[in-house]
Amino acid sequence: MMVRGTFSLVILTTILCIIGFSSHALKEDSFNDRKASTFMSQINSRKMFRGINIGNALEAPTEGAWGVYIRDEYFSIIKNAGFDTVRIPIRWSAHAKQSKPYTIAESFFKRVDHVINKSLEQGLITIINMHHYDEIMQNPTSHKERFLEMWRQIAERYKDYPEDLYFELLNEPHGELTDSVWNQILKEAISIIRKTNPIRKIIIGPANWNSVYNLEMLEVPEDPNIIVTFHFYTPFEFTHQGAEWVNPSPPVGRKWTGTEDEKNQIRRELDIAYEWSKRHDNITLFMGEFGAYSKADMESRARWTCFVAREAEKRGIAWCYWEFCSGFGAYDPIRKKWREELLDALVPRVEFYVSVETDHGSFTGEGWYEKGSYATIRFEEVKIGFPIAYILDHFEGLKAEDRIVDEKTVEVYVDEDRVVKAVWRKDYTLLILLIFILVCIISCVVIILYRKRG
Ligand code: GLC
Image 1 (cartoon, rainbow, N blue to C red):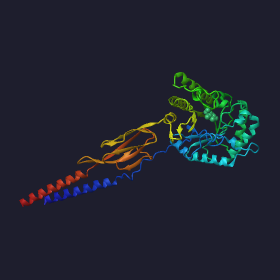
Image 2: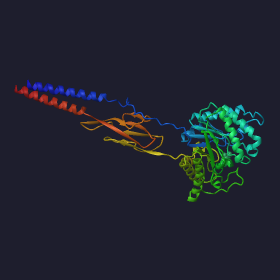
Image 3: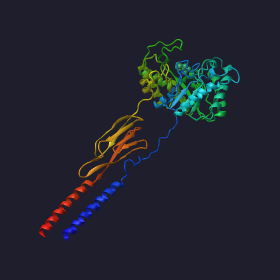
Image 4: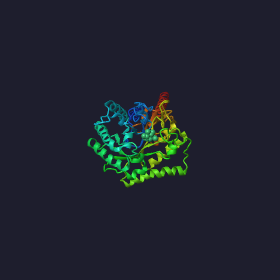
């Protein structure tokens, strides 16, 4: 009787234990249901940082005349390469009537609308300027009215456009457009634009081809939405060697090896802009053009471009490379590929380390990854050990961007050094089953022995 009672108790306890453990296991969320921990999504500051000019297109006498026609896909190519800004030089003066009211051709406006829209669609800050208005450089007095009237039309046309569209008044004022004449005209242009675009970002630059040496003479109107631009091609003999449009054209063969003297020359000029901005309420600076022509050797070009870009960044100066796919081109439109040396110089590849913490199991995928990519962490098994097993339960340290592929695989978004922790739980099912079998065997033996005695 006593043995029978003990036997029933053992069986009952074993069954209860099995039910208890398996319901505990079921309570655990399955991999597919488990949500990655939410986290604050990155705030997009919308600030200009790294940009590129789509030059030799809309500032040519007609688009395509200088070999560049802006294709819609250029904007995604630019965006995907890591740029946040595009500057689109435009020769409005070739598409506006010579006499009052200096009407800009509707067909041209439509083309510009399209280009701006494609750029904004990619989330790029989009700068349109007035480029190659050569006549105003020669005769500011007689072209001032036309200049202002063109801006009145442009401002009216784009007044309802998103704030990511910026206006830049005039590329590289020079010649008769001296500091004082330019100061006067730019003030009038800004007040015309402000009537329809009260808070749009307006970019202005000094005379003498947007030289840093003329910043001192630039009069910046009181307005919180003004950005000041300068262009940077120092040393000119290097960046413009063999340039057909420069007379006399600097001889080819000049290298830029990055000696201390060469670097200091660049630092000194950037410091002029930086110091000037500090003395002017830290007004936002924009290096709207810099680049080295393709007649220079690629190694020197890449070295110079990288150095200038990093030095500008150190001083908090946003920049725009001159230019996308023409003579200075960082992109080869024939091969449809970036010139890697220049792209790397402009937007350095950033890599982060993805590591895995785990008490059990083996996995693949730990290592260095490029920023913006996904690292695939894959465990070889989800259950190990005997008779107490370890089950891969879930991953800790995940972000909303990460993707859980299956119970042993997770794709980790690389935006910084990442640590993913694999959490395992103990599973006693097998052990209990073994105990149960053992108990059964013992019970049977006891019963048999008992019966034999009886
Ligand atoms: C200026 C000119 C442009 C030229 C570039 C480099 O922006 O307007 O046509 O290609 O400088 O010299």
